[in-house]
Length: 257
Image (tube, rainbow, N blue to C red; front, side, top):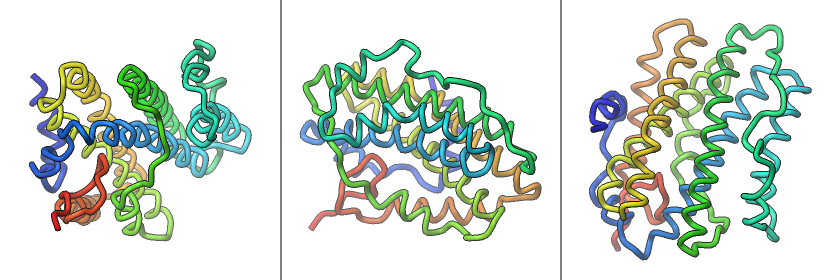
């Protein structure tokens, strides 16, 4: 039912998730780690989009609005004395930006970047809360775990002069969102009914996120970016296909000694 949605995602990526990763992810003893890392990935996606808005598209006042929006999420994650019930029971407007962001002068694509990234942030915050609810129902406590090598490996490829830095970060954002979408779809049939339905429900937004990132990269470049996309797609595929000694939502092939 969702093959049409997934077709461009799979065409964009340089490889499919190996079956060995799916087999590892589907093992009951890895469920807690899978959900905790997935939860963290949703927050990191929101934080990444926020960083892009604050760095490139808005003034300091609007940047502060974004920080205030993120504060409850980051306080929950980074404080040792986190209170899940209080976090989930806070004001019903918890997932709304307090005021309109104002694009700063000198960046022609500011309004487009703000519109796409604010929608992405809102959806990622919502997904973060949804995963927390699933964890709570299964008596899986949230915990901080070290990030895997995936995102860092991609960020090492970023060219360090503008506007290419921004363009590369947007392409990498597209790759991460597309990989998430592909893994949700491939993993869903191997999970229990509740998790399977949840992962399928995420596909549409994740597919749109990758398209939004890619469209922004092309618009800001103002020229053909296919060569750079091809290069970064290949680097992402290397990370997915290489042996990995840590299991994470975006990790590579599980290492077998």
